[in-house]
Length: 239
Ligand SMILES: Nc1ncnc2c1ncn2[C@@H]1O[C@H](COP(=O)(O)OP(=O)(O)OP(=O)(O)O)[C@@H](O)[C@H]1O
Ligand SMILES: [Mg+2]
Image 1: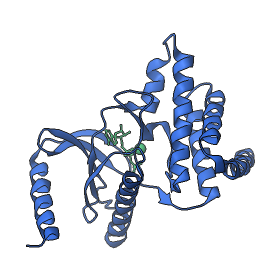
Image 2: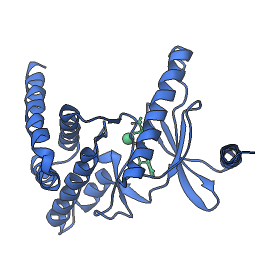
Image 3: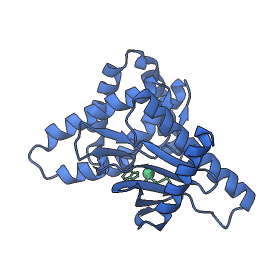
């Protein structure tokens, strides 16, 4: 048996064992169902499934599921090689639309912001968090990684530590050297903050400041971001 076949067999064993493990539903979304389970003994992991959509044509459905699943797994693997912050990819089964990845103990940035709202240190903590977000998004963009859905729910804090941001949910992500795509990534984050957090303008300006400080070549992206913003405003005025 070659090394590759051997690895495949091992994965199959782990995979079938994990099916018998308890799965705890973390989130049932429109697109994906996310479980906490285990693939390595004693080690929790996250299983993200994209179940079949019976209202879609089966061939089209399979193709879409496969594509999204592979896109997400590829990006996780790419970020890992680049040393960027995301969960470790353990195993992917594109046919079934399933990805097993590292379980991140902690909370989403969204929940974190809510949890510190009544804290006396709110301002200080928040400034530091927004600063960190800007730095980490710049790190993604420096490496031409476009997240595609930069919301505060798609950023986690490992062990609730605001200095340890982990990006999740790369299903809409791409790798492309495009100022426009990076600018749109920033715009999505700005809109997401505006829809979920009070005082979002101030918050986001801190993120932009640190984005620009962390990456010398960010100026052209930030210029493009102003255009995207203008287009967004025009569109919302037209309705
Ligand atoms: N690696 C992880 N470790 C711990 N919790 C996670 C992890 N990945 C996701 N989660 C939790 O599960 C939730 C849903 O995950 P995710 O954002 O990947 O799915 P989704 O938003 O339903 O997917 P999609 O946008 O692709 O439909 C997250 O908000 C987070 O709370
Ligand atoms: Mg998500």
